[in-house]
Amino acid sequence: ESIKAGVLGATGAVGQRFIQALENHPWFEVTSLAASERSAGKTYGKAANWRLESNIPDNVRDMEVVPVDPKKVDADVVFSALPSDYAKTVEAEFAKEGFAVASNASAFRTAEDVPLVVPEVNADHLGLIDVQQDNRGWDGYIVTNPNCSTIIMVPTLKPLMQFGLEAVQVATMQAVSGAGYNGVSSMAILDNIVPYIGGEEEKMETEPLKLLGEFDGSEITFADIDISASCNRVPVMDGHTESIWAKMADKPSPEQVKEAFLNFKPDLGDLPTEPEEVIIVREEADRPQPRLDRNMGNGMSVSVGRIREGIRYTAMGHNTIRGAAGASVLNAELLHKMGKL
Ligand code: A2P
Image (cartoon, rainbow, N blue to C red):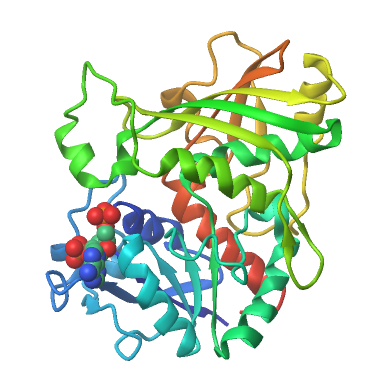
């Protein structure tokens, strides 16, 4: 049997990655594409300003785009790539109407009764769905994934928790695709760096505390880690790179940290979008690099390198796949596996 999937914000940068991630998916079949009034009524092929390296999949090219309205969308699960301000009202409407909402938007990430999940890190937090449905009286529910920069960092922090992780400093070098298509089409920052990405540092400093927190069946106690982030937009198309400094009570050696990364093999039970290796450790002094490493594990692996005393290391991952659409799809796959979808 296949599960009917809708994409909200299907025409945008992350929406297109959702379409790509769902093409030939063994469980999910795309049945609805929703976007703004500008796009509604057009075929997807005409409405979407398609920019990805692959062609528009046949299964969606001639599909008519509908408005973002629960009555117009036919699906069991909707993947949301909507702007956050708009997602706040709309995702709640969909959940109320019985849809499972797997959202990449930030609107509900910090809500106490909404799971913020990276399956390899805190799958057990999905138990919050029951709390959410009790609280709000919704037939459906909302599950969120973190900000792209957070997603690329957190799988590397999880195995460091065993050493008593106390503080993290991170400087990001983020691709323009994360800024939506205005950023990509202009590549206006060639020969330049923009040392500010609105809201990004706050997200990187708070979301990991929820993700790495403990869920006791009713609420999440946030992790006690002091995180400090500086975020920069650099002229790279896809792939966020992060220089990370991690302070741990046990003061592990670089060799011990490398072992911890290599041994981090969470078992999600072979989900279709799950990468073979969550963390790939590179030995070369000049890796990871976006162009060489962003598509590892179909864009779902995080590559790390330059592990050295301090502890200091570099992490890199695909921001719109691992960091966005792939993350939401993986959450939905896990929900299906758990019988919640
Ligand atoms: P549209 O393409 O019709 O404007 P991006 O982040 O790349 O700009 O994508 C945002 C996505 O969310 C697009 O699919 C866009 O549709 C959709 N969207 C933006 N604002 C609204 C809105 N107010 N109502 C419905 N869809 C919206």
